[in-house]
Length: 128
Figure 1: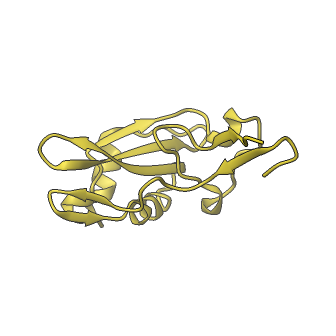
Figure 2: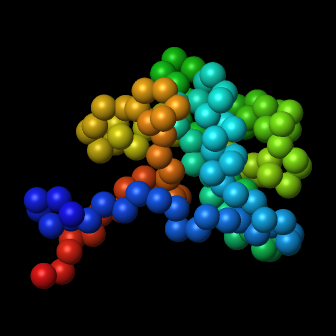
């Protein structure tokens, strides 16, 4: 809790995606995608899918001056991940979560944080 009474939650709502009966750990996909030289931040989550139950969606912030395409991300993932772990949807954001909050952006792979549906930090005023 900070001095203003806000609690900052930094983690995933769910640690596992279940797609067509397969257990998929988003952290594994995030860690792999962070090895891509054009990726600054990444977050993988499960989203509802009528056929599979859930499917894999990844949010990516490219490094400054870099551009990525959904196809490029999928090809990169197919080189090392089994097919059911390859993101079915990829969404790009121009600014990192830290920049949106007015903080310094992360440096290197250690600075990435997961964003649940494009919202990195959920702040809630603690009830007194």
